[in-house]
Image (cartoon, rainbow, N blue to C red):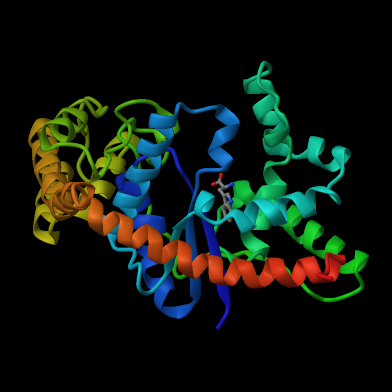
Length: 331
Ligand code: TRP
């Protein structure tokens, strides 16, 4: 069975776009591959979070992924810093990662531009740590988007370089892959692009948002002056609301409002009210699970321990073989 590794940023609560997109794929993937999903808390140190922010963020991500349906018995879900072997492999890989190639990484240049006062070595070697995350489990498949393509290429470079240096075929090559069918399009509420947290407050509906917050955000969504001819094409901001409705509402509801639009009788206030209520309903079971799991520290600690044990078993094997290959041998 092929091995999949995916690192989850430790900041960022899940929104509906994540839920109906990546998460649904993770949930299916966990039955078909040997999956390692980890919370990338070591990576997050590049931005110097306070201890309580760091812990709170990791907890929130763990809780939400479990609530959304990642099964800790099926997949290995773990916290990166619980597996010190990752940091060890990172150190070895750093010896063969060159300043020039690290400085050329697009993500590095972007971060330097955004935060010129915090250009630390961890930022520079972020792709090396990411390579260690992946090849420590000898993964071949990494479910990431286009923005991570260059990091994957660097992971292949570092693994291959290790192989060449020590003249063996130890690490297989990892590739980005997109699982399953094309992702359902989940637009944001700002009428422009897809749902995302970088698009500004109010654009995304989070799984942890309360019903009041959901209603407020939906009611604020951009609309236009209404259709002026029958059956006209919907402008983006209106199409987006219908796309969202397609995901969270029943077919009857969708058709009802679609007909009203096509016959120029639509009242956007009514549409938004309905959309908000259907979003509240669709997210209710997860919201409940989020709060149950967040309050069950015994369960969380059991899950974290199980994940760390499974991940370390695989990581320990790799690192001990790597040490042997490098020439760290016991007397
Ligand atoms: N760089 C990834 C992101 O920004 C997160 C990540 C860290 C990752 N290590 C990984 C993703 C290993 C896949 C595999 O989203």
